[in-house]
Image (tube, rainbow, N blue to C red; front, side):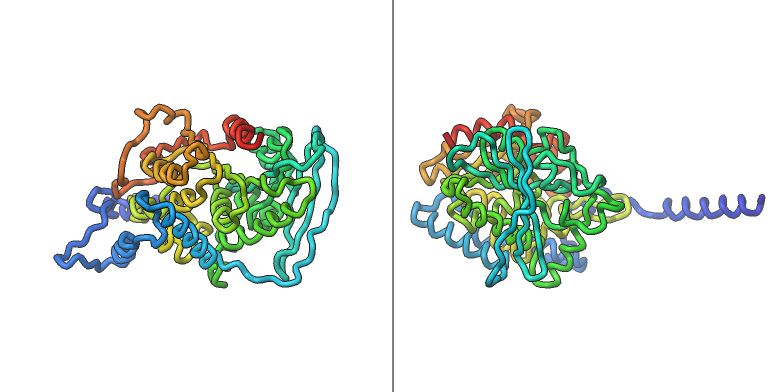
Length: 414
C-alpha cells in the first residue's frame, strides 16, 4: 500500500515538473502573427495561411459608392456566386410532400409533414396554422439555432425526452409565437439536430454532433450550409404552393445558426418578402484573423466549427455584404454588432431609397451608442471573450426577441 502511494506521488511530481517546463505562450509576442524575416515570409505554416487569408479581398464586397445600376449588377453577382458555392443538386421527379398528422392546439392547428429532397433522404417539418385564418395570410419559415429543433420552435416536446428544448419558453418558441400572432409558421430542423440527429436521443442529448456530418459533406464536395439551405429551399417552395399562404408575403426568420440559411435563401430567392435576422452581424473573415490568442497550452482557436465552413465563401463575400444584398426587402437585425458593419447594410438600403426597410436593434447592454465599441478594424490577438466584448455582444441575452419582431412584422405586413 505504501509503495502504491509513493508511486502515485512520484507520478504527480513528474507531471507537475513537466507542466512547469512548458513555456508561457500567452504573451503579446505570440498573439500577433508577424514574420521575423525581412522578406515577410513565414516558416510557420499557420503564419502562411493566416497571411493568405488576410490577403483575400472578397470579389463581391459591397461598395458604398456604387451607382444604382452597379448595385443591381452587384446583386446579380452575389446571387450567381451563392449559387456556385452552395452547389444545390438537380433532383428530378421529386416526390410530393406528405402530411403525417394534424392536431388541434390552443389557437392553432399543428401539422407534421415529411418530404423527400434526395434519393437517400426523408426530412420533416411542422406547420402551425392559426384558427383565425379566413383568407390567405403571410407565412414565416422558422429556422432554429444551434442545439434547437423544430419541436422547440413549435412549443412541443422533442421527439425523445433527451431532445427536449425549453419548449414552453417564449424566448424559444419562435413558430408558436408567430402562429399566436395570426401568421402561418413553418418550422424546420437543422441537419444533424432534433429529429434529424443520430444517436443523441440515447446519450448526448441536444449536444448534437454537427461536425461529423459536416466532415462527410465536405468530403463529398458539399457543405453543411449548402445541404441545410437545399433542404430549407424545398420547404420554401412547398409553402408557395399552399392556398392559405400569401405567396407575396413569405418571410424567413433565423435564430443564431439559422441566420446562415436565411442569407442563402434570401440571396437565391428574390420572391422572399422579408427577413428576421436574430443574431449579431459579424464579419467572419476578420473574426478568423483577429481571434487568434493561444491558450496556455499553445493552442490557437478557430472561431467556429466546420459546420460553418464553405469552400470559397470568403473569396466571394462576408456576412454584411450578403445582408446588404437583400436591399430593399425589409429586414430586422435584433442583436446588433459593430456599427461599422451595420452602417454598411444601412448604406445599401439608403442606396435603394428604402432606408426605412432596415431596422436594427442592439443588446440592451449596448443600446446606448456610447457603450458600444466604435472601431473600423478589430485588433489582432483576441480571445473569444475579448472578441465578443469588442463587437458588442451580450451572450447571456441571446434569445429569440419576439418583443421586437412582432411589432416590426405588424408594421410591414398590415
